[in-house]
Image (cartoon, rainbow, N blue to C red; front, side, top):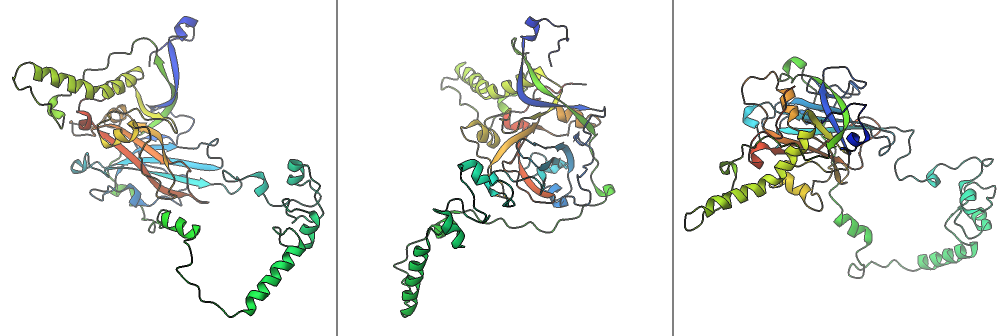
Length: 413
């Protein structure tokens, strides 16, 4: 991050702008919330109710994976009464590298019973005692009778008291309905004709609604720590809002992308002259535009390992792969939540500096090769009274998907 002292002039302060993105930095110093961590072994908010170990198994080799990120995801203003935790795991097997399912994420949620659910209105609360003022009186300016079960929407208070059905208007209407039922009962039963019955709204709703959520299989116990793959080094996380220098962006490190990394090479001109090379340069430049924006943005705060902005937009490493296409359009096409069929929204992403921190003790160049890991979560934070665990959508932009190279230039500490 471009630094400035507390004694900077107003002109110097005006040279910077702060965004809504919260950045995470790896640190060995004990922070206020030690639960947040990069690497290390996972810890659970309720050790007696951990998630199923199946959530942390690689979908390629079916072996246990290693923790990349553990984060306290509480958002009291958006999800009052919800406790939230987020986890991202990755497989360390070389044969699983760059394969779908080798990086997974899940969310833990617990909803407090004492907090009303979102969308609950004050009128939904249980009826108060007769001595307390009724909510309908304060809203509609009416006088409530001694019958606390009276429907405030009834036409008259007399009807409400004399008739237990709150939706009835008068006793005369009720008597007429009873006579009609008696006449119908005196007739012999008539078999219904299926051709005369139109499709009901409920039937249409059942046809158009998504398949009901099937409960997950019984939780799979976690193996002993000695049977787990070796963890990455553990870091705490410090957070600060992203600050960008308003002056021209720092020059990002040169990319090592070449046409050999691009799936479709532009064709050379028929004459075989310099036109083919110029076309290739222009084609590569167009593909690099998103990557250069990615690298330039990270260069303002090169030690960031995490970018967090609930319901924001990820900083894309590329727009040419499936993840990039999901978020570069007008409407993201992230799969819906399997738990409640609700939509998913972006919450956070890991950036390449996380690799540099996690693999600081690794020998060789056979480590992780992704440009960014994007996490999208259920917009409703669906869960239950106890700790409920849901797998969330994680999108990985691999380095070679955008042409390889060092994404954003991993900084040395």
